[in-house]
Image 1 (cartoon, rainbow, N blue to C red):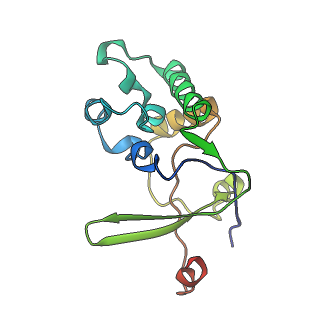
Image 2 (cartoon, one colour):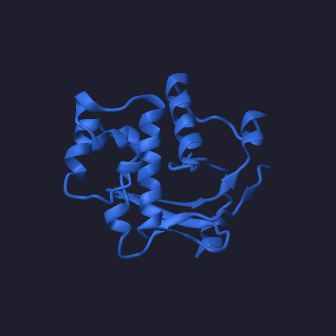
Image 3 (cartoon, rainbow, N blue to C red):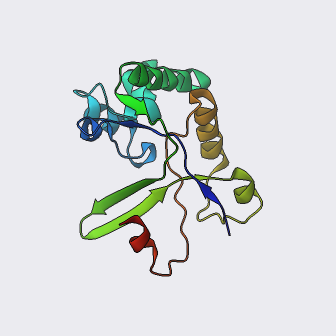
Length: 162
């Protein structure tokens, strides 16, 4: 059985959550993301899709782009838009799309357990995308997007988080 652990997350205050939260970086084009955040300087897309701060012909590439995302993240923390919890926590989240509601738990998991196959890969990913996200994590010093894991549910999960 894989082990999960609590962690000290950085999150927006309740009154800023709707302004900061964003779709995942890979569900829209850069142009669509620019349109979405044009009047919102606090969108988390400025961290996970930092090219939106530039015109298409002036976007930095590679590490320079991730460094800009890191600067945006540090600014959000410095300005109090994101605040790190004092204690390690598990985080319950809920996403609703139409009639489907997904409830989950955010936790830290072991990279070694993933690499050894204890945690199974759920999809095929492209190495260039994996490498880009790895550089993003290394440069921002933050895991800015969840990796979804599933488990066999014996029906008790809901009782444990209620």
